Length: 442
Ligand code: GDP
Ligand code: IMO
Ligand code: MG
Image (cartoon, rainbow, N blue to C red):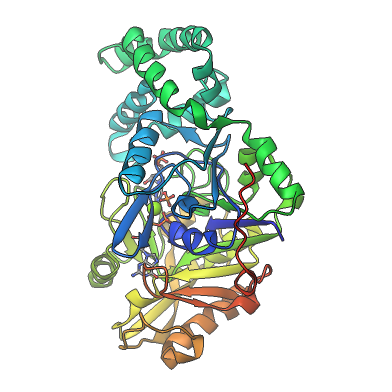
C-alpha cells in the first residue's frame, strides 16, 4: 500500500495540511506535485502554528523525506523564507528534496499576474497574485526556466534574457509599467541558486525507487478539485491539475502507483476569489462560519466566502479523483447551529440537477436544493470516538456517507494533531493499525 494521495475536494483550504501532518507520522516520503506558493497549508503542532506554502507538510517529522515535485512552480525567494522560518523554529530542512524539473516563478510572472487581474477589473479571477497563471503559461509555451537552470548560470542567463525580451515588452507596452532589469534578476537568482542547490535532485527517480522498495509515499495535493484547470469552475480556477491524476504528471509516477486516494472535505464549504458558489451563504450563516471557523486565507488573509456543504460538488470530486474515503474537517465549527444543511441538487429554469451540470451558467444562476438536519450544541473538540459524538453529529456524518456512497475515514474536530476521530476500518491502507516507518531512503 505505498502510494497514498490527499486531495482537496472543494475550492481549497479543506484542511489538507492538517490531514497530511496527521498521516506523515506513518509514511516515509511526502510529495507536493502541483501548485506553488498560492497554497497555504496550516499545521498546528503544540503551541506552534506553521503556515506552509511550498514545503510539504511532512517536514515537521524528522524521519520523513519531503519532495517538491516537477509539477510544482517554485518561487525561490519564498522557499528560502520558508526554510529560514522553519529552521528558526528548530525544524530541520535537511530532508527536503526539490525536482530539477520544477519551474521557477520569476519576477515578471508576478507582475503579469497582478497586472492581468487589474486589467480584468470586475471580471478578475481573484488570484493570489503569486504569478501562478503566468509561470504555468510559460511552461506550456516552453519558455519556462527550471531549477536545474540555476545549476548552469550561462544557460540561466540566456533563458532569462530571451524571456525578458517578450515579457518586458508586455510589461511596458501593454501595461505601461517599468521594464525589469536582467542584471538585477540574474544576481538575485544566482544567490537563490547557491542557497537551494543542495536540495535539487532527480525527484522522479527518488520517488519511483522508494515505491519499488515498498516505502510509503504520501502525495499532498494543493488547492482543490473545483480549482482544477480542466475539471474546476473554469476560468475561476488555478493553473494546474489539482486532481489525483495530476500526481502522475507532477511527480512522474504511473496511475498504478496510487493505492489509496483520500479526499479532504470541510464540513461546510469555503471559497476565496471569484467564481460560482451555489451553496454560498452571504448572510448570518456565512458570517457565523467565517468567524467561528476563522475563515481567512492562509496565503492572502482575504475573508473566505462561506456556505453549506455541497454534495453535488463532493460527489463530482469523488468521481474525478476516484476517492476511496473521505476525511472531513472542522466538524467542531458546526456546533451551536440549530439546523445544518447539505446541498443535494441545483434547480435552474425548472430543471433539477443532482449531478454537476456541464454548463457553467447553471452553477452561476441555479437555486440550491437543501436537505436539512438537526444541529447540536455540545463542544465536540475533545471527542475521540465516533460513537461519543452527539447523535445529531453522527447523523450528519452518516447522511453524508449515504449521499456520497463513500466511507468517511477521519473526522477532524480541531486544528491540533490529537483532535481527530480515526475510523481506520474505512481506510484501505489501514495506516493507523501499522507501526510507523522511519527509515530514510536518501
Ligand atoms: P489547506 O490549504 O487545505 O491545508 O487548509 P488551510 O490550512 O488553508 O485551512 C484550514 C484551516 O482550518 C487551518 O487554519 C487549520 O488549522 C484549520 N483546521 C483544520 N482542521 C480543523 C478542524 O477540524 N477544526 C478546526 N476548528 N480547525 C481546523
Ligand atoms: P490551498 O492549497 C484556496 C484560488 C485563488 C483564486 C484561484 C486562482 O491552501 O488549498 P491562483 O493564484 O492560483 O492563480 O488563483 O485559486 N486559490 C486558492 N484558494 N486555497 C488555495 O490553496 C488556493 N490556491 C489558489 O484564490 O480564486
Ligand atoms: Mg490553504
